[in-house]
Length: 189
Figure 1 (cartoon, helix red, strand yellow):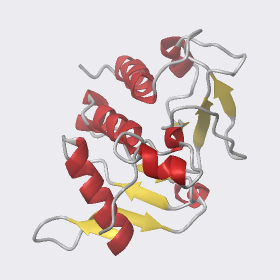
Figure 2 (cartoon, helix red, strand yellow):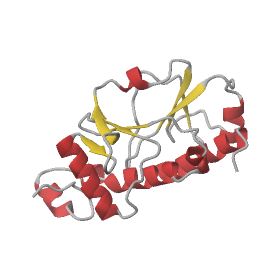
Figure 3 (spheres, one colour):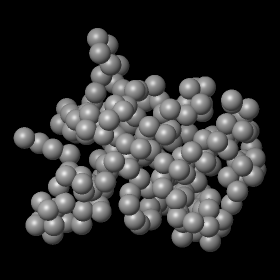
Figure 4 (cartoon, helix red, strand yellow):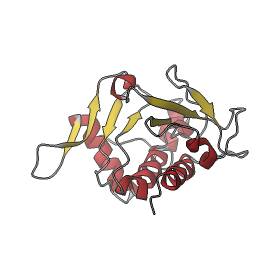
Protein backbone atom coordinates (compact mmCIF):
# COMPACT_ATOMS: atom_id res chain seq x y z
CA UNK A 1 0.00 0.00 0.00
CA UNK A 2 1.00 3.61 -0.44
CA UNK A 3 1.61 5.77 2.61
CA UNK A 4 2.47 9.41 3.18
CA UNK A 5 5.85 9.24 4.90
CA UNK A 6 6.20 11.03 8.22
CA UNK A 7 8.93 11.16 10.82
CA UNK A 8 6.83 9.64 13.63
CA UNK A 9 5.68 6.45 11.95
CA UNK A 10 8.47 5.88 9.43
CA UNK A 11 11.69 7.07 11.13
CA UNK A 12 13.41 3.67 10.94
CA UNK A 13 12.45 3.18 7.28
CA UNK A 14 13.71 6.67 6.43
CA UNK A 15 17.04 6.16 8.24
CA UNK A 16 17.55 2.78 6.52
CA UNK A 17 17.12 4.59 3.18
CA UNK A 18 19.55 7.39 4.15
CA UNK A 19 16.78 9.98 4.50
CA UNK A 20 16.56 12.55 7.27
CA UNK A 21 13.30 11.94 9.21
CA UNK A 22 13.14 15.67 9.97
CA UNK A 23 12.52 16.31 6.26
CA UNK A 24 9.30 14.27 6.39
CA UNK A 25 6.91 16.40 8.45
CA UNK A 26 3.46 16.61 6.83
CA UNK A 27 2.15 17.26 10.36
CA UNK A 28 3.51 20.81 10.08
CA UNK A 29 1.56 21.39 6.87
CA UNK A 30 -1.55 19.99 8.59
CA UNK A 31 -1.15 22.41 11.53
CA UNK A 32 -0.60 25.37 9.19
CA UNK A 33 -3.65 24.58 7.06
CA UNK A 34 -5.85 24.23 10.14
CA UNK A 35 -4.55 27.55 11.50
CA UNK A 36 -5.16 29.54 8.33
CA UNK A 37 -8.41 27.92 7.21
CA UNK A 38 -9.94 28.22 10.70
CA UNK A 39 -9.00 31.89 11.04
CA UNK A 40 -11.57 34.70 11.16
CA UNK A 41 -9.59 36.19 8.24
CA UNK A 42 -10.57 33.22 6.06
CA UNK A 43 -14.12 33.02 7.41
CA UNK A 44 -14.56 36.71 6.46
CA UNK A 45 -13.66 35.82 2.86
CA UNK A 46 -10.31 37.65 2.76
CA UNK A 47 -8.16 34.60 1.93
CA UNK A 48 -7.94 34.12 -1.83
CA UNK A 49 -5.85 30.94 -2.09
CA UNK A 50 -3.27 28.73 -0.41
CA UNK A 51 -0.49 27.06 -2.35
CA UNK A 52 1.73 24.25 -1.11
CA UNK A 53 4.94 23.27 -2.80
CA UNK A 54 6.36 19.91 -1.79
CA UNK A 55 10.06 19.22 -1.50
CA UNK A 56 9.79 17.25 -4.75
CA UNK A 57 8.34 20.33 -6.49
CA UNK A 58 4.66 19.31 -6.67
CA UNK A 59 2.47 22.43 -6.50
CA UNK A 60 -0.91 22.08 -4.78
CA UNK A 61 -3.76 24.60 -4.75
CA UNK A 62 -6.00 24.60 -1.67
CA UNK A 63 -9.33 26.41 -1.96
CA UNK A 64 -10.06 28.65 1.06
CA UNK A 65 -13.42 26.96 1.76
CA UNK A 66 -12.10 23.39 1.90
CA UNK A 67 -12.56 21.62 5.22
CA UNK A 68 -9.28 19.92 6.09
CA UNK A 69 -9.64 16.74 8.20
CA UNK A 70 -9.08 17.45 11.89
CA UNK A 71 -7.04 14.33 12.57
CA UNK A 72 -3.56 13.90 11.15
CA UNK A 73 -4.24 10.34 10.06
CA UNK A 74 -7.23 11.38 7.95
CA UNK A 75 -5.26 14.34 6.58
CA UNK A 76 -2.53 11.95 5.40
CA UNK A 77 -5.19 9.87 3.68
CA UNK A 78 -6.57 12.89 1.83
CA UNK A 79 -3.11 14.09 0.79
CA UNK A 80 -2.17 10.62 -0.43
CA UNK A 81 -5.38 10.47 -2.49
CA UNK A 82 -4.61 13.94 -3.88
CA UNK A 83 -1.10 12.93 -4.95
CA UNK A 84 -2.46 9.79 -6.63
CA UNK A 85 -5.56 11.27 -8.32
CA UNK A 86 -4.19 14.85 -8.74
CA UNK A 87 -7.39 16.42 -7.35
CA UNK A 88 -10.03 16.10 -4.65
CA UNK A 89 -13.55 17.21 -5.54
CA UNK A 90 -16.44 18.24 -3.32
CA UNK A 91 -18.87 15.40 -2.63
CA UNK A 92 -21.54 15.38 -5.33
CA UNK A 93 -19.97 18.32 -7.18
CA UNK A 94 -17.39 18.72 -9.90
CA UNK A 95 -15.57 21.56 -8.14
CA UNK A 96 -12.01 20.71 -7.13
CA UNK A 97 -11.20 21.62 -3.51
CA UNK A 98 -7.58 20.46 -3.69
CA UNK A 99 -5.64 19.96 -6.89
CA UNK A 100 -2.13 19.74 -8.23
CA UNK A 101 -1.30 22.55 -10.63
CA UNK A 102 1.56 23.45 -12.95
CA UNK A 103 4.60 25.35 -11.71
CA UNK A 104 5.64 28.11 -11.25
CA UNK A 105 3.44 29.44 -8.46
CA UNK A 106 4.07 33.02 -9.64
CA UNK A 107 1.58 32.62 -12.50
CA UNK A 108 -1.23 32.28 -9.93
CA UNK A 109 -0.25 35.18 -7.66
CA UNK A 110 -2.05 38.55 -7.84
CA UNK A 111 -0.24 41.07 -10.05
CA UNK A 112 -0.50 44.03 -7.67
CA UNK A 113 0.79 42.31 -4.54
CA UNK A 114 3.51 42.56 -1.91
CA UNK A 115 5.23 39.16 -1.70
CA UNK A 116 6.70 38.68 1.77
CA UNK A 117 8.99 35.82 2.75
CA UNK A 118 9.42 34.78 6.37
CA UNK A 119 12.60 33.54 8.00
CA UNK A 120 13.94 33.68 11.53
CA UNK A 121 17.36 34.32 9.97
CA UNK A 122 16.22 37.62 8.42
CA UNK A 123 17.91 40.63 9.97
CA UNK A 124 14.72 42.66 9.42
CA UNK A 125 12.68 41.96 12.58
CA UNK A 126 9.27 43.64 12.41
CA UNK A 127 6.10 43.98 14.43
CA UNK A 128 3.53 42.35 12.15
CA UNK A 129 0.78 44.80 13.15
CA UNK A 130 2.94 47.79 12.17
CA UNK A 131 4.23 46.08 9.03
CA UNK A 132 0.80 45.39 7.47
CA UNK A 133 -0.21 49.01 8.06
CA UNK A 134 2.59 50.17 5.71
CA UNK A 135 1.17 48.28 2.72
CA UNK A 136 -1.31 50.30 0.61
CA UNK A 137 -4.94 49.19 0.93
CA UNK A 138 -5.24 48.51 -2.80
CA UNK A 139 -2.36 46.02 -2.74
CA UNK A 140 -2.76 42.28 -2.08
CA UNK A 141 -0.53 40.36 0.31
CA UNK A 142 1.29 37.15 -0.57
CA UNK A 143 2.95 35.42 2.38
CA UNK A 144 5.62 32.78 1.78
CA UNK A 145 6.31 30.48 4.74
CA UNK A 146 8.19 27.24 5.14
CA UNK A 147 6.10 24.45 6.67
CA UNK A 148 9.17 22.44 7.64
CA UNK A 149 11.13 21.55 10.73
CA UNK A 150 14.35 23.40 9.83
CA UNK A 151 15.76 25.48 7.03
CA UNK A 152 14.89 28.51 4.98
CA UNK A 153 12.79 28.87 1.88
CA UNK A 154 14.60 30.36 -1.09
CA UNK A 155 12.52 32.19 -3.69
CA UNK A 156 13.31 34.65 -6.44
CA UNK A 157 9.91 36.33 -6.40
CA UNK A 158 9.61 37.77 -2.89
CA UNK A 159 9.82 41.54 -2.46
CA UNK A 160 10.83 41.39 1.20
CA UNK A 161 12.20 38.91 3.76
CA UNK A 162 11.17 39.53 7.34
CA UNK A 163 11.25 37.95 10.75
CA UNK A 164 8.35 38.57 13.12
CA UNK A 165 10.12 37.54 16.31
CA UNK A 166 13.54 37.44 17.86
CA UNK A 167 12.83 33.76 18.52
CA UNK A 168 12.29 30.86 16.12
CA UNK A 169 8.54 30.27 15.73
CA UNK A 170 6.51 27.40 14.37
CA UNK A 171 4.86 27.96 10.99
CA UNK A 172 1.41 27.63 12.59
CA UNK A 173 2.25 30.32 15.14
CA UNK A 174 3.52 32.61 12.34
CA UNK A 175 0.20 32.10 10.54
CA UNK A 176 -1.58 33.11 13.75
CA UNK A 177 0.43 36.32 13.97
CA UNK A 178 -0.10 37.15 10.29
CA UNK A 179 -3.84 36.51 10.47
CA UNK A 180 -4.12 38.51 13.70
CA UNK A 181 -2.35 41.50 12.16
CA UNK A 182 -4.52 41.45 9.02
CA UNK A 183 -7.69 40.95 11.07
CA UNK A 184 -6.69 44.04 13.06
CA UNK A 185 -5.96 46.05 9.91
CA UNK A 186 -9.31 45.12 8.36
CA UNK A 187 -11.31 45.21 11.62
CA UNK A 188 -12.31 41.54 11.48
CA UNK A 189 -13.44 40.28 14.87
